[in-house]
Image (cartoon, rainbow, N blue to C red; front, side, top):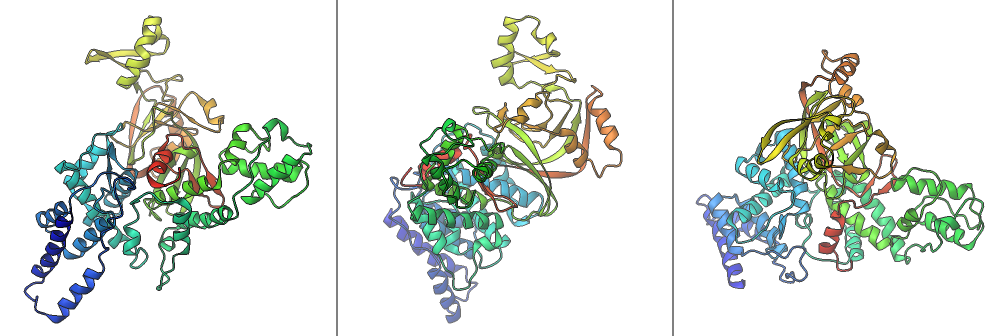
Length: 548
């Protein structure tokens, strides 16, 4: 491995020399080359399979071959060499079982840049085809660093990541070494990592958070939580919810108040009585954790309060990493769904248009993270049942009840692979409701209405088979068709209730971004936490931190 590394370094020096347009003897260019070489991070041999974020490594000679085969320019050669030196040639975008979370996050941003920002430097049909295939693998796939298709895609992604950073982030706001740490390299202590992020100082006073406000807001909260950790953390509540009710006086009330004071949910209050001040503090906490603000605690909410501050710091660090892939200040319309929040956000540039409660996929039927283009509205839709639902749910129901299809207004339209092709007719009991919104993707996920309105009254709303149900689909239809003079609110309502399927194409498709944030700061500067409903945080914690 060392021999290969030395060969790579030698090649790098020769490569730059051979590409200097015949002026290798120029003293000025020699000095520039020496300066460039100093900008390359030294190889970090301390990273090993036992402490690496990812345990897949490749030979440095493969990178050298990639440079020659693809005629990569010197500036990118330097950056890519430095990037992989910093990781000890550990893969950044693939893990044993498929794409990393960072790969999916970057590719979402990449798709937006090539589709809506028209970034020609990132357009690559071959890479697009490969990534379309990889991202479509919901259950993952086996990865080998010796697979030429995998390693070529890995290196292409790194090339595009560097190009994106250089071309789209103002010069100086992402330092080279910072960029190399956008994708975690090794397991670290969360408090030490937080300290390094908070204490770093730059001579030019340019910091990444100055060009990414969502990241900046989380970093400010990280500073507060880090200070709490250095004080020893917040107190644990040992009482049950039944012991913490309004009017009660006990020492446990003092502990509860102190706990809420730590996170600024209420002002200091040392009295042992459950008073209105405490009730208000509990409501603030409930809002931040996605609960209906009743002021009445549950045992589940006490469990949330008792999560140690170090665990919350891990959660903040993970989501700061996710914020790096958030499209920063997009121009024009955008629809963003944050899965753990169970909320859809409609934006127009930096302006919030409206929010809407949604129901997302239950565990085992996860709603995937991706970008799409909302380009069609379908009024009074048929529901074409997926093969998986036909096999697992409908066929057993038909065996129990021969009249099942008729009683649910379903019909068989054909047969494929030994399974009946079934659809549900438009109508009041159609599982898609009265309208659906299409943004073509390989996961067959879309927005739709639902007859099961009661689910929107719940705090936690993961109940669907993967698609996203809207609490007010008529409002969404009016919004996306607002520039189409043929579709008034009255005609939209009529089409929704016509029981005749009708497709309407949008004149200007709207980008849709499906995200997964379990910590974020809202427009009122409130820090929110959400449950890790699909276990994505847990998977990252196992790879990213030394103490779980």
